[in-house]
Amino acid sequence: MDKLTPDMMMTFLVVAAVLLAFTLSCWALAEKIKKAREPKDKLAQWQQETNDKLQNDKKRLDSLERGQGVMLRGIDAIISHEVNGNSIDKLKKSQQEIMDYLIDR
Image (cartoon, rainbow, N blue to C red; front, side, top):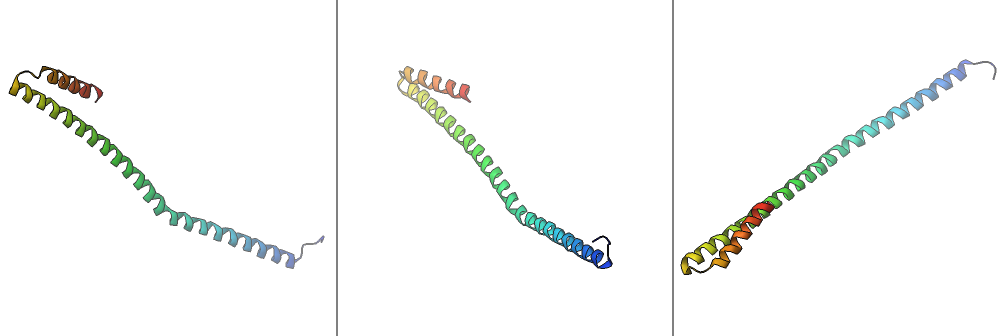
């Protein structure tokens, strides 16, 4: 084992080439797996963003619906007052509901 023979050099080069080829194949396989997962990751991200937007829209629509209900109760109180002239308590309650809605908004 003192001398380095051509056979030993050839064996070393073959082993090094095989290790290099194995490493490169593993790297290529890892890249293919990464590319295969990319659409799934993008889809999951898009789905999350869409769900967030839908939740924001639902909150906004719920708020608008609540506001419409408050305004309709106020209009009803005004009409009741105009019709019978004595719905002052209903008017005060509606006024407070409208103020609460506007403040909480």
